[in-house]
Image 1 (cartoon, rainbow, N blue to C red):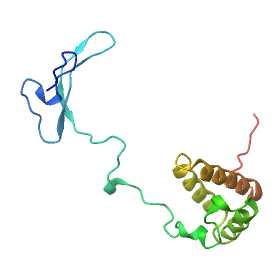
Image 2: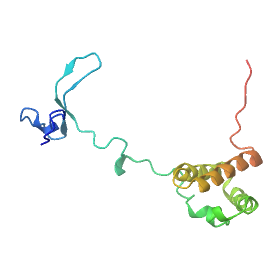
Image 3: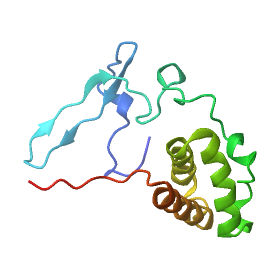
Length: 144
């Protein structure tokens, strides 16, 4: 227990009450209106945002894996020029089509843009190149 008087009590110390299996104690609090909300038992939702393996959706196209772009030379892209990367992407687009290659690069970009900004910027530039070269992902503007 904490010696600080301003600290709230531990969640399990709600009058010695314990919750059923699959439930956790929600600590008491005061809302913005000043109404006191007492501690209760709630369903245990685990770590929010952590999807269990049994509920995860598998990658849509299992035949198109991470090594598929490497077959065409699209690897170690941080040290390659734009023309070398574009040549590699052209080979991949011929086999898989522009949309699956664009989606694969988008997945790589989203997963690595914060960890390695240089890598993410090159992936972003390659996505734009695919969109412009193969007219992929262009939305039509309809006037009323």
